[in-house]
Length: 252
Image (cartoon, rainbow, N blue to C red; front, side, top):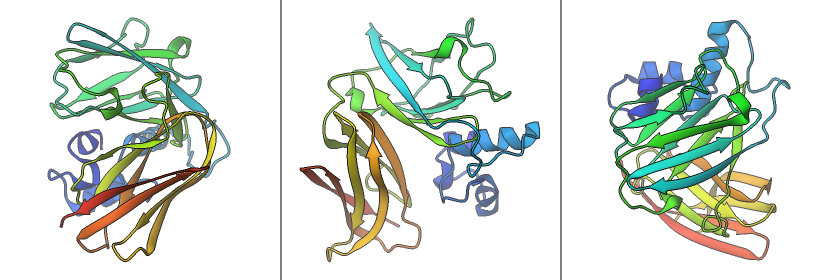
């Protein structure tokens, strides 16, 4: 399942539809680090699911620094046990602060993604984990997408502690064009009641991706357009008095 996530998740060309169906543990039409965490729980015999009341959703704080061609991403959380990080370019050389995080596994496959997870379902030592990625070319920090999960495989909110990220905006939709899954990232400068909908070219609402109060920072949500026809769609973010619409292209 880790290899499946690294090579495209539900769109991976390396696995059969049957294998993908089995890997989608939470049945939401996507395959990511959250499914990996839930599989680890099954292997460990914890019998936990996203419907359990155990664990905490909470949030993950992310900071970054660059030293030459090296990018350092630091994730602060009391509850996270797994991370999925996607960059706009190929990740060919990455390492975590292994001396402090010996319980964690780093998985890469010469793609734009890497996974960090604990095979024993443990949280970060000292509530912090640093990932070093070498050979990184210049890019916008908003092009990085992070999915974080807690000990029962619930998605945690990700907050970038970087002023250039904290804006009302749909910051990224990747891939675009897409088939059939894309990730929509958006930023909030403050805790806000938001609504993120998808509309067709006729202006009809066809999906609500997320709604409710979200904390300041960057967030992401996946849309699985399986079952929808190829064409142009529009994602609309409503956050208080702010409204923004971006175009998506589904190509099958």
